Image (tube, rainbow, N blue to C red; front, side, top):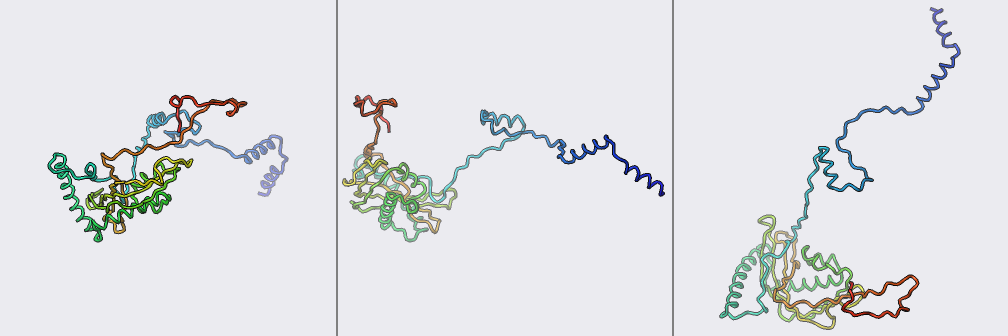
Length: 315
């Protein structure tokens, strides 16, 4: 036993040859460096296109996805629905031509009187529904309240007070009032009321469900106002601050009746077909001049404007 142990120790104590030294050095190098072993993973049927590839259109990418057997998800175009107000004016009021009552002996007068009776009967039913949800509603006092809302809304518009304007007009009326006024200056003033405002029309439409009711009341308002609109350069575009004008308007007020915290807000205006056309807007334009070279100056050319009718105008 002792002899076998001695023989084993002698073998380990023998000096290593050149071959063993090379093998040991190779093993040390391999152990020091990371070893990468290729392993087969799951096959990918669809490889997303590279970010650098910009020539492929959306149709080509969809065709490649279908060829790979991948079902593309259908895209749904969703539109937001606002339930705090309606999207338009339901059964709008048709003002009589010239805002006057014709003789019932004529054909047009008889037709006008019949239409007024039909609209008044439907308005009485709408008044009952409105009073069921709003006990303080009164057709006589509501016209004055609507006029006050109209004045406050236009005053907030001239001051660009968005928070107050949202509380006075509906989400449908707000973009119509502020569209195109970003770089303009508005000067509006309410002078007096020529005739007492009065309620002429009312409707209670439903939306989405049967019990979701909205109240729409049309108010006739004849007043005197001043309006002046200036562009971003400070030049007058429309109206005059010193010249008051008589304005006949039909305002549509709306409220979400089933909402206990709802309030009456300005929803839109009804413009009759017989209304006179609006005044044209005065625009600031630029007359294109000659193309100058780098060494030339405009003052030294003594340039004169050619025939204005042949000049192409630019905004």
